[in-house]
Length: 137
Image (cartoon, rainbow, N blue to C red; front, top):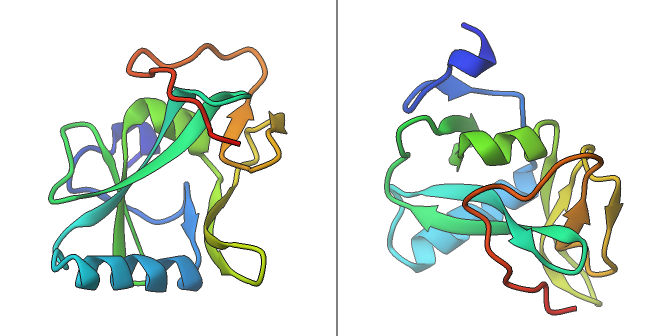
């Protein structure tokens, strides 16, 4: 089955990588909020100081046409538009003296702001579902 043909409830394992550390952080959030059956939604939206910004949310079920990935026992859902910007990305969780949180390394980003939450790609317009929310850095 081609990646473009994957729809809700189909499992894909490679377009985005979730590290073991990130999966552990997601499981902790799911347990803390008592929603162990939810998935991590990863998306992009217009805004931030570089044009696009990353977003994450916990959701009970995928939407129609979502890509569904499962890595390290955590389900990740990504809408079709966001997948175009996130394909090949690595999602990690860092916890050090300076900061802690999710970090996305995106091979599609041609530039990023200093905080790493906002990015730009070459020749791509903001997605239709985007809104300007600012990145806060």
